[in-house]
Image (cartoon, rainbow over all chains, first blue to last red; front, side, top):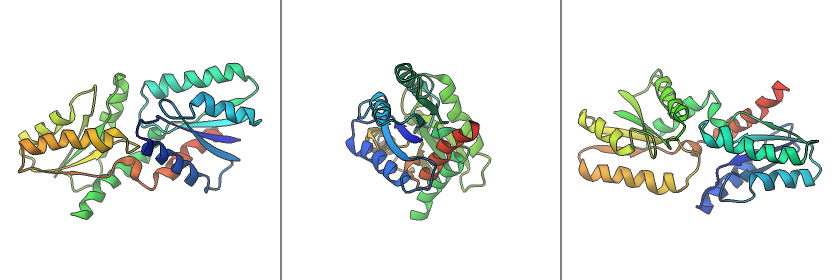
Length: 123
Length: 123
C-alpha cells in the first residue's frame, strides 16, 4: 500500500521543495505504507496523473491519496477526485482511496492558535 | 491585542464559511487576544485591507495576523506582507505582527499522517 501526498503546486520552486521535504520526513514515520511520494495538482511535477501512473507502473495495486489542502474548495471537492477518477478508469484493478484533506483534521484549530501565539514569545 | 486569521478565499462560499466557522471555534480558546476575526487574500470578503482597517477603526493598536496557508508560496512571501505594509503606511501607530504561517508548524507532519491513516480505519 502506497501513500501519495497531493499538494497544490507553486510557481515558487522553493514551495514545491517544501512538499518534497515533507514527503521525505513522512518516510521516517512508522506506517503501514510501503512507500510515500508526492504529486501536484497544478504547475509542478509530477502531476496527480503522472504520480499515480508511476505507482501503477511499479505494480502498486493499493494507493491512498491524502490532499495537503486546508479547505474543501473546488480543488478538494472537484479537481482532485476528477483526476483520480480518470486514472481509475484506465486502471480499474487498482484501489485508490482518498483520505480526508488536512484541513478537516480537528487539531488544526490548536495548531493555528499555536502559530498565532508563537509570535508573542518573540516580542 | 486582536488576532486576524488570513485565508486564501474561494469562489465556493462553503469554503469561506469553513474559515468563518474556524474563527468562531478559535474564539472559544483561552488566549491573550481580545478578539479574533478573519479576512481573505482574494475573492471573499473582508479583504486583508478591509479586515485590518475595521480593527483600526475600532481603536485596535496591536494586531497579530496569522496566515492560514500551508506553503511559503507567493501568497505568504509576497502578497500578504505587501497588503499589510500598505495598511502600516496608512496607520503607523498600529503594531501589526505576522505570525508564522500554519504550514510552518512542526506538528503538521503528524497531522497529515493522521489524516492519511484515518481512511484505513474505514475499510
